Length: 122
Image 1 (cartoon, rainbow, N blue to C red):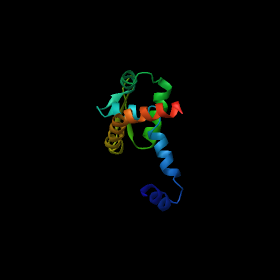
Image 2 (cartoon, rainbow, N blue to C red):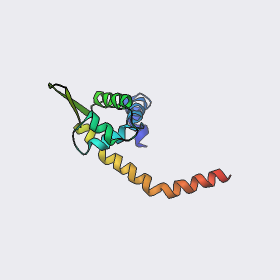
Image 3 (spheres, rainbow, N blue to C red):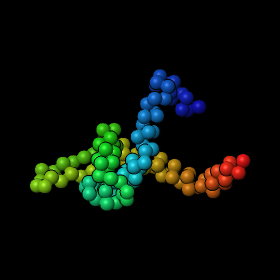
Image 4 (tube, rainbow, N blue to C red):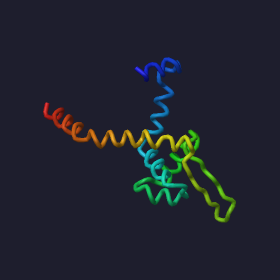
């Protein structure tokens, strides 16, 4: 299997892959990436376009995405300071697989819900 092969090559038992997937698959990352796919945004604009995200969670998630090279942060020397966030090429490369996964979920919702219902009836 491809996954097993990759983990054996890396020699870390899948730790690196799990860490990256943990970052990408958290509650807010894909929403932030999808929002930034529309273009560069300021912090407040991002927060307004992502319902339910707190200022603290947006800050933490953006820092992690910047650290991982998915988002760039540009500070402009103005008063008050202006900070803009944009996807990097690596961040942009996440869009196609994320859309594929979202489409898979949409396609398989009926089967998953039927399976859940059957499981609950046991």
